[in-house]
Image (cartoon, rainbow, N blue to C red):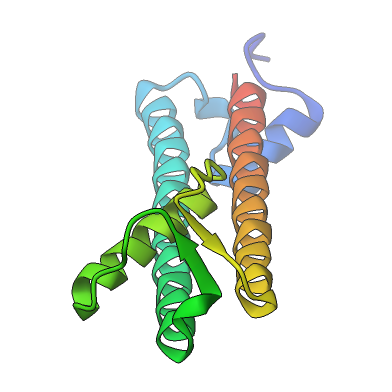
Length: 148
């Protein structure tokens, strides 16, 4: 019997998770395939989080823009918002990104109840994305420790 053979649940984990035979665990090709799978998982997670962030920021920017078009009194700004659509949309992308990152400079502030509700929804979604990302990064980190 090989003294380097994995015993018990660790061997079952490798077979279940990566389809790797425990007799070949010390083979460099298998170790490389394990590392490649871990990197692929972390890259997928980064892509998913980036897509979620971009979609949330753009979606709320459009909501803020619509709310401003309905009534310019919904937001108080330090700088005067230009009447050009794209410049104003850029300002709301900026506001949405600052809100999503929970920095909140205060140069654009929602005044109406509907504006405040939208901001609270965006803050809640940013919190969920953050928790989702941390939980999955932690899962990859724990799986990585279990491998070796």
